[in-house]
Length: 234
Image (tube, rainbow, N blue to C red; front, side, top):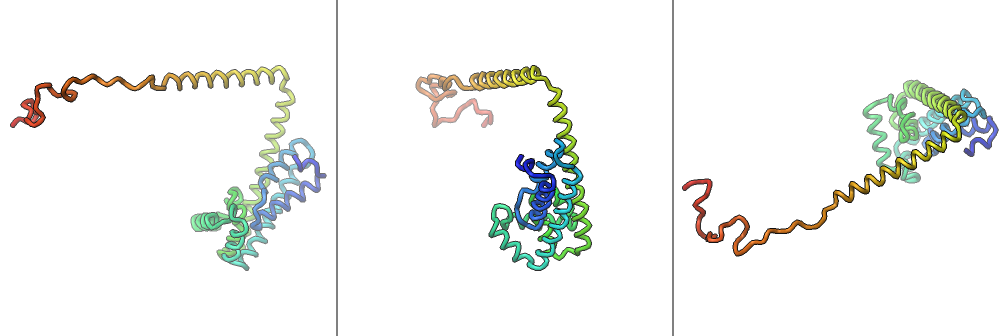
């Protein structure tokens, strides 16, 4: 990972900066930066509490700056951002974010930290919609802290467990596992091909030969005369 080439202070600073800019409304890979830093922390290069703290600070400050910008610029500002970043902040994205705010209210700020679209738009949109700042700050801080510390420590402990498991895993077991995986894949492919071949039709069904009259009609029957065997008696 490219983050591992930086000194610990550089990792903390970069994680906080990327997440802060993303929270202001600029589409940047904030979650990827946090995930990468948390996995690096599992190797002991950086401290998980500092990674989580930097991410939380960037999220809270960035959302607050985005709120101030959105309150000042309003919806026209969001529309200009949409024209600049149409793949991330286009009219459809803005409409969806507004629907989430209409449905959840200020809780959209809290849950928005866990949703990619709202993570970018929550701050500016809350400001543009004139959400009271006190309510916004409480939801923003709670969501930012839970997201940053929860994500960091979950990945940190998963990384530690994976590293310990891989360290104790013998090469012989690894070879056996790889061969078993390849063998099962080949067997499943062969079985699927056999079933596909069995399901293919062998040819068009032969049509019965008809001499003289249509199928199911007596040869002596006149199509212009009523059939005496009708189920509706006259």
